[in-house]
Amino acid sequence: MGDDFKSRLDDVRARIERAARRAGRDPGCVTLVAVSKSVPVERLREAATCGCRVFGENRVQEADVKMEALNGYPGLEWHLIGPLQMNKIKAAVGRFALLHAVDRLEVAERLDRAARERGLTQAILLEVNVAGEKTKHGFTPDELARVTERMGALKGIRVLGLMAIPPAAGAPEKARPHFRRLRMLAAEAQALKIPGVTMRELSMGMSGDFEVAVEEGATLVRIGTALFGPRPVG
Image (cartoon, rainbow, N blue to C red; front, top):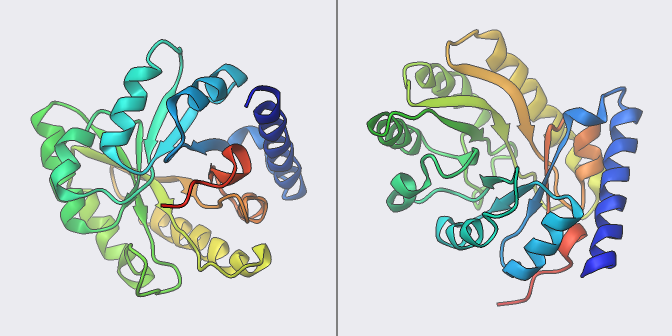
């Protein structure tokens, strides 16, 4: 990987910077989350050496192995970006700096209980199904205000923002209305001024559309293929 990965990383960072500046934003407000699902540990070591500091995993068990293997690298941060299964909630609490995909009220309530039992506060994002796709997880836009109000009563979690995966449209510009809608939903939720809920983070944008996402306000972009290449099939 070596120089090849470094060049990919530099390219992605430069594209983030250009997109942010086009939108009149500070590029420093955008965090690159290197999506490391299915990426071998040795490649993650190379990525860390090249300067990657935030890694996003889809499964708790796979993340545990990689966290242990890379624990000698200072300053690494791990995010869980995939849906959280009920039987993995206790294992996830306190292990990840941020859970991106809390998609049901029941999951939030169990996270709250598990975190309080351990004397922790777990940072989370609420996943929103912005396009109403039957195959996608997440809260509907219409129920978001009600759900967010409920979150204020859960002292073991801290809602930092929203996350979404728009429809796979094949063209970055087709994702723009969905990113824009997520930003507007976050602003509406922030206006409610619910204790324990801030909408400072927007997790949106992947390898095929992250520049548009940054233009529309993304603070976390989840990049896998553009850094590590296509994932193996199977």
